[in-house]
Length: 159
Image 1 (spheres, one colour):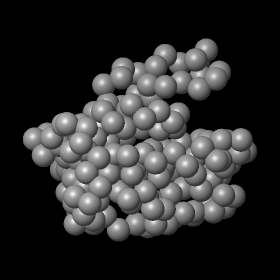
Image 2 (cartoon, one colour):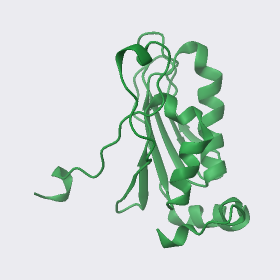
Image 3 (cartoon, rainbow, N blue to C red):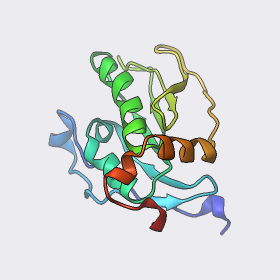
Image 4 (cartoon, rainbow, N blue to C red):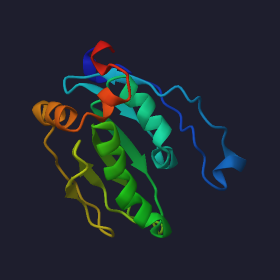
């Protein structure tokens, strides 16, 4: 089995929204990360991104990128636009927030850098493929110039 066929991590959504609570059971709150050629990657699903604690748990594990597939509604658009950059800045990692444009979703897939800057953003109502550079030196620059992780008193270099 080559690397492209191997399962790297299993993640189940831990925070359920609205009617999801009647249909599904939440996954465990053991936010896992895995190594890749880009660095440490973590995964969230939708509502998980709205809480700072899961992102911080990944930051403690030395996360470099969080990928979050989602179906955020039009009514949640402001939260989508604010929380992704906040999670990136607070945890000094890249965020790939992937959101649908169907069924009254707010769209706006984003690539956010570790300074919390939205580098690329998709349309709110049309399918699109966006790209973003993953720059390890920018990660280090963010972590050096704004020492949030260091001041939280955990060392991410050991994970």
